[in-house]
Image (cartoon, rainbow, N blue to C red; front, side):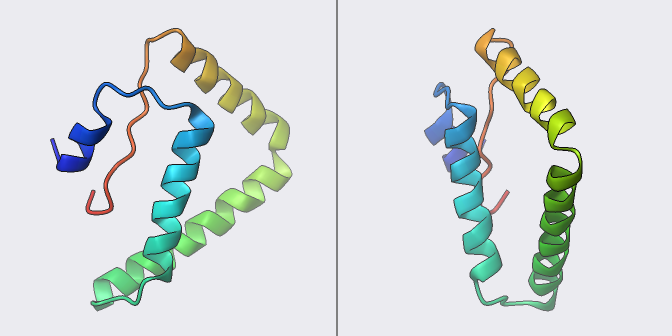
Length: 89
């Protein structure tokens, strides 16, 4: 368990809050100057993945909306907990 996991242990965040936290971390990672070639490649792949997800949201909004609704329903029953990973994974 990382220090970040400990910080979030026992906390139940709403999906929008969790999404905002993850987005902030992803944006910070993507905007950071890569220190290695490997990090640069991960940033490039992450940008590509985000573009693909954006296209999927545009094309399949209804299906994805239903999936998110199911996640929210699943989370509200207490059978799932969302964890935000630290920047170092």
